Amino acid sequence: MLAATVATDARGQDARALARAGTAAIDDHRFGDALAVFTEAAAMRPADPSLCFGAGVAAFMLGQDEVARSRFECALALNPGYRSAALWLGDLHYRAGRLEEAISICEAALRRSPRDRELQERVASWRKEQDLQSRFHAVRTDHFTVLFEAADGEPLARQVLERLEAAYSRVGRALGVYPSQPITAVVYSRGQFDEITKLTAWSVAAYDGRIRVPFNGALEQRDELDRVLSHEFVHALVAMLGGRNVPAWVNEGLATALEPTGTVDADPTLARSDMRLGLAQLHGSFAGLSRRDAEIAYASAARAVRRLIDQRGAGVVVGLLEDLSRGVPFTIAFQQRIAMRYEDFAQSLVTDH
Ligand SMILES: [Zn+2]
Image 1 (cartoon, rainbow, N blue to C red):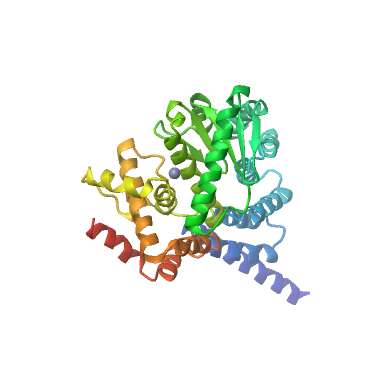
Image 2 (tube, rainbow, N blue to C red):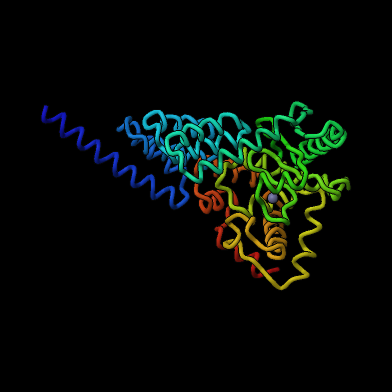
């Protein structure tokens, strides 16, 4: 009896130590380590919802959505009032285009805390989007579904579908890899797009699990439509290959460098300005940048990725992304795949621009 109690206590302490290590790994963006230790800790203390939740967050960041979903559901089964687990699971469903599930998870959480402002806003905005989407029509191929509102929008939707297929073939050939699942694109008016994505005025489209395109006059020009759809298609591919922990410069750089005219455009943008952004400044999202800083950020990122592809080949960049989704920390994956220290590569871009 005594021996058993001691063993249980030791296991409890081990699990707590593992949970601390898991939290530290999440703080350091070492999501592979975090998933491993939270999974081990949860096996020791299966009734502790916070261990399921920690594993869920790590899996979500690695883009392992099925694992993340089961871990968040486990946390909510153990503690139905677990607010963070509800928010993360709702977000996961939302990004996968499962609006109804997303809403019902957050509504259940809201019934428990009716005054929770964040939950209220989220449910209200998702309901509005669901209402809008219920009026949408769809056209599809094996690789894409395009949603659009007005019945007379079908010719444009078909053009979007056709341009996405063109990007699929062209980018697929360039990288030697194709998306593992079909991709959804939604065509909005500018007003609908702004309300749903809440992005800065300079953004011309977005990817958050679905490609979202505001239709405006510029997209009537075929080159611009091609550029925007190709760019967002690459983001969808990067998310499938590398998860959600890919540095912004790799993600945006690849999307920009693989635009139909991407290689040509980066250099004049950089030549026009003295401003330079080092790669270390380009790990986080570009969404908060001013229009001018964003231009430099995209051009710098495209130039860095172009250099990687020219020096090592596109397959190596794909391998780097796959390492990230397996949880290999970026600087280690970079050094292994590119056969160069990340700091040296970053420095090489600063010294010879
Ligand atoms: Zn982008």
